[in-house]
Image (cartoon, rainbow over all chains, first blue to last red; front, top):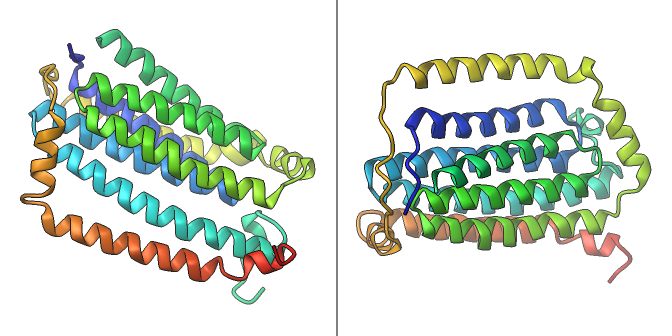
Amino acid sequence: MTAIVPVPVGLTVAALLFCIGLIGVLVRRNIIVILLSIEMMFNACGLAFVFAGSYWLQPDGQVMYFFILTVAAAEVSVGLSLVLQMYRQFGSLDVNTINRMRG
Amino acid sequence: MTVIFYISAALAVVAAILTITRANAVHSLLYFICSLLATAVMFFVLGAPFVAALVVIINAGAIMVLFVFVVMMLNLGPQTAERERTWLRPRTWIGPVLISALLIVELVYALVYSRAGDTVGKAVEPAAVGVALFGPYLLAVELASMLLLAGLLGAYHLGRGVLKFRGGR
């Protein structure tokens, strides 16, 4: 019933998603898209964990995804409220406007 | 089932590329939700139905809705998308893309020469995951709840003055 996938293929998909997220963090200047790219990297790590868990037939991979999801949720809630504060202070979502310690 | 894995993997990667290349933040969000749903299908066909449900309910359902709310609250105009578009020139993205391409080549090289086999094609039941979560990982589950509480308090504290700024509503 479930898919039979070679391990290098599955982990390559995870690595591709991670690298796309990395490019997003490095290239983009909109802080919302940067947070999205960080989410994408979290998700790619979780994909690698779940893939390894299904390779070894152990539940630990899925348990790790549960913890990654928890960390992502906490990070996003704090990050988005920081985005709201940033928009309140500077009126912009461009990270180049906040590159000084005392604005 | 294996074909479904490959289709959804391709969909996830394409949607991820579209996520980081769209100038409008709402388009990025919607493409990322597509990518997450494709990842959920991948989890399902890999035999992890518990995680697939978690991705749909929490990641695509709750976290992305939070993003949509923030984008709607900020109400960014078309000039923001226009300025984002000027940032997306090749001069800006060629360096990071080269670095990441190097990273992906190294990772694929390491993976191909690892000589690991195929997945066995059996599902790991949600019951086994639950037993693991509340058995050996019980302390980590408690720590996760404390982390979520800290995130809640942090978000409450940081977001307190924002509504006043939006006109006292």
